[in-house]
Image (tube, helix red, strand yellow):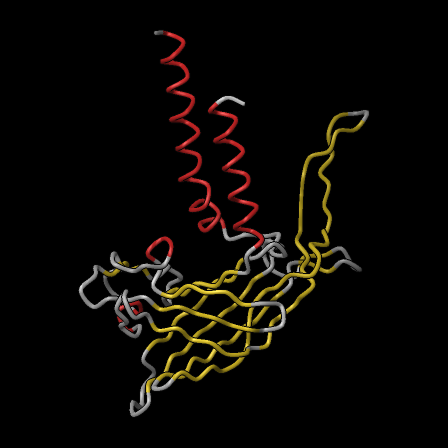
Length: 227
């Protein structure tokens, strides 16, 4: 098996492994992933963890105070600080949202006389779409919320949302004991093998690194032929 094929295999294997994990990461109120240049979590994500279909949550916050925050303003700056050598690990039980998802699709289908616009509400199966509940790790309290609007109606074959795509609303409020106002008000994203409608930006993060390796392999192979 040549280098390019090996790298391609690793790309798809990595994507499959990433999809198999039920992963959760924290975002600010604008939907941007909170990162710290010195975080020991993969991708330098500040809050990264897993949640099972039974609702067992483990969330690791690695947020050294001397690191560079991304984004440099907003709610990410309010996340609890926790040094890389001693990250804050949150464990608890939440209620998973297992929801039946539908998505509207329109496409041009070939007919004997040309093309015809087809419209259909597609069943995307049951998705692990969010979590609801409270997890306490003194002095912090984590409150997770989740909402959902389906994209279309299978029985009537009509759109529900404007573009026919499902809308997920996920929220996270972190409170600190002794403080009246919330410490952090943001959101989270959850990704696993059941989520057949992945977040485009998150999927690109997974693909970009491995794709670059494939290009490097192809370039080296071309140079070897020319030598």
